[in-house]
Length: 222
Image 1 (cartoon, rainbow, N blue to C red):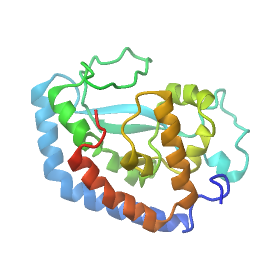
Image 2: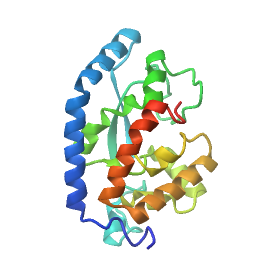
Image 3: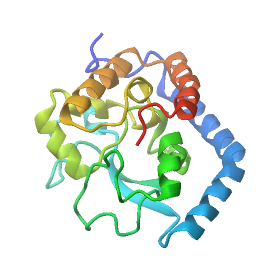
Image 4: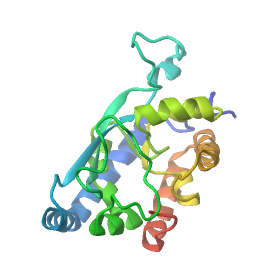
């Protein structure tokens, strides 16, 4: 069944229950590590501990069948929300309003930031996004509006990723490294759409289980 026709074989309330349960347990278990990370960030470089960005989330219009209708002046592809991450770059890493992809050996990344990104611990605060209902633990990674608008014109079916809530981890994340080119994005979109087509509670649990070895092995991180 195509990604346009199905978002899951299980009702959404079951997915929501799983995500809230995992997020609460994750926040409780990881609280000591989060506190230590926050302290190290504070002591190692000037700037905020938690970094926020605007990201593109679920496209509810597609669920209602009116994807091409919007009252917004600019169609951003989904409902935007604020994502939370532990700051892994210098506070002056970007010019306001200019989104830049991180690269390998990016000089903007701090020493502790490099370790966090390799182990993906910088994404721990996104458990709060899960509790708020803006993200799931598993799903396509959310992109920034300006980058989303650009990729939507370069990658076929890119907008279909927004048929489910974005996630902290995902089928694409455990099977491929971070994006460094449009070709990488195309490969990840194919994996994202494969996930959406086959999405189930059991697949989510499988991806969550596979995420820990990826973090420990630092697969493809930079």
